[in-house]
Length: 381
Image (tube, rainbow, N blue to C red; front, side, top):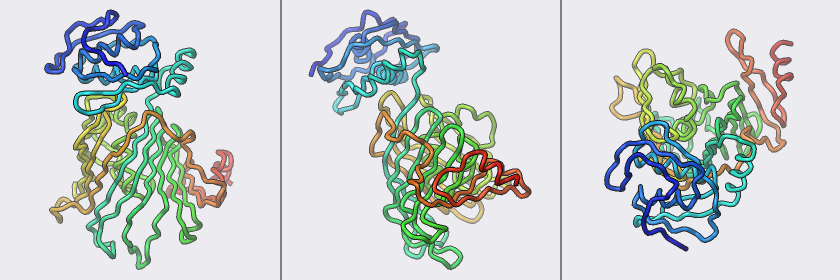
């Protein structure tokens, strides 16, 4: 291992001095700067001690701030550039130290992308635990259920999977509601997907799925935990395009909310808080990111709380979702963002051409996702 003691990189042009104690704003620029020089500048601006593994390779980094930037955001930008352009990963160690390691897979991807003159794609995987506390009286034993979760994001593609671990018995229409083995919501950048797998043959087979034409959840699905998870980790494109007070709902089956969405100021600018009501202002939804974690050049939520309340009839939320992050990775483990049906019989509703009155879905029972021609034929035959 080796560490830096002090000094600024010679190839680092910066308009102001960045220190750990002060947070001025200014612009900066790296022009084909060596990785080691970039790391030396990073240490100078953060005050952190860098513990660098011997196999960190030399590469050239180019990065420029277009607007005045704080020291904190400049550090995040550098962390992201090191990953995207050199496969170099900075990881907090505590006690004012960070490790600097080379991820060979990321390095190879950076070389390939630079050779093809391709822009880097935002990519990460988050794992943790999510709980839902319901107070609507529909549970037989208590109202809290817990699950593990995984969120994968790659550009405009995303996939969120909830793995139930402790779900109490729930009764609906005098029948016990089946508990899925897993519940996934995803988008491949064109279609949105909802997919649930069960261990028994209680709901039209062991697999149930929906597909629709959108990058967002669009009110589909049935697992409440998925919506706060999507907002927390996969709504970066949606937040950037939001221009009015109509906000996508915070739970499935609900119409758009009217309210305010405030994003974090640091890339990738995910929600810091959301407050919304229905059109009659009788129901209220809210989401608060109580803490963010800065890792791999990204500011991602570490803990989030979301609630649903009837404004006039309840002082406490009818339901509360709490999610906590346990692990963040710089790459997605999955390669396809359309849920894998595993060649098993699946009950599918496809909403691509839901232009009936009322709107309706094409229905398939098959072991694969139907081709567009099959879906269109099902609607118009």
